[in-house]
View 1 (tube, protein in one colour):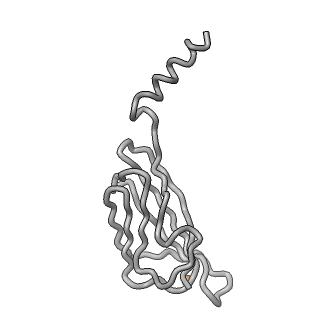
View 2 (spheres, protein in one colour):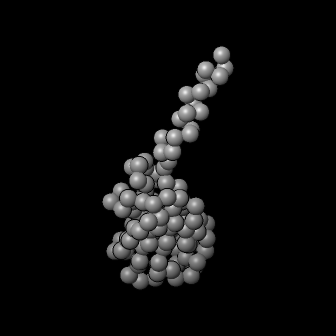
Length: 123
Ligand SMILES: [Cu+2]
């Protein structure tokens, strides 16, 4: 009896592409919780090739040295390039000292969407 129930599941697992996958972000520079000096580029490398129109990042400055009660300040004006598994953001000038929150959203070939965020510090 048990075999009868398990067979359909085994079949599903055996067919590639049926298991849906959301893009994950195994590595980024600056990395999550990193402290870096004057970055002019941010790079993210995902777990699978990305669909460019469904992939992007937002960057917000959440704190600044010597400034209490800093409101979240969106950073704009950077260029984002999506190619294969990677997203590269080129900043017009180095990020000033502060704490940043990077939010990303991404989709792979099967259009399954993933999203996440991480933060880093510029000293
Ligand atoms: Cu600021």
